Image 1 (cartoon, rainbow, N blue to C red):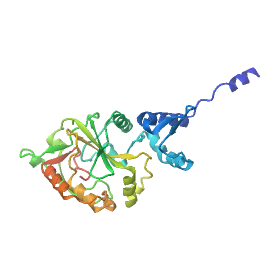
Image 2 (spheres, rainbow, N blue to C red):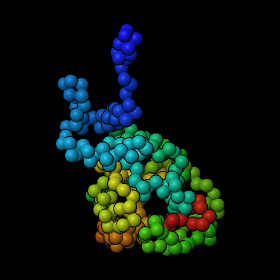
Image 3 (cartoon, one colour):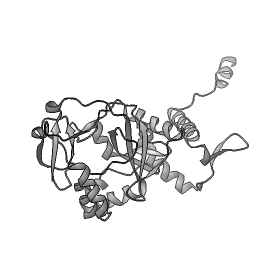
Image 4 (spheres, rainbow, N blue to C red):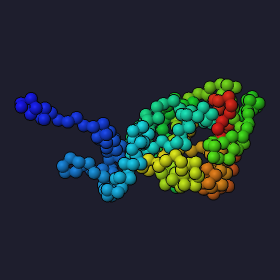
Length: 280
């Protein structure tokens, strides 16, 4: 009858999955327009990547869970290693309270606005230096005669699968809350490097597939400088030990190691947790 005919003309509302796909596609186009063009019939297609169905299926499988949580975009994703800065109260460095998905979105905005990828200590490592938009506090303190008696030391590891190492730190309760930093050094590893590190350690492989974005955010450092500060000497040693021990596999550079020692013999991290840090 007429009423049934009328109902048939009512358009079916789009599914939630379709809406998520449309939103994700729009964000990709806005954040990385050079990779996309508009088809003559209004559809968006990618220029630089093959449109084979096999690749499309792989991409949908690897990005599905990350897309829904908002922790991945067209350029960056928030790696589990960096998520310790939100989730681990013993983290030795900048701890963050901003929503994780909001942080990833703002990093895409900063990169699209011109913040470049700066070369790091190896080809797979990059940095993005941005003004501190998360109100993070400085995470290191200059060691002086007045405060050196407040230093503590102990053995700990960053993850259960890594070797415990000897570290020293200032308890925040002893030195007070530091001021907010001027800058953030957002450290990136390539997806390919993170896959190699996961393959080398069973505990990392258990975390599942990585999102299909080219750069993983692995650390956020709060500092006043807009350039890379030396990593800790023990981190350089761990990297030289190889991926099987939680490092990157990059050989020790003596000149960079000496520069690291010169910096860290005069500085120490500030740790909020009374029980001390989780590794260096």
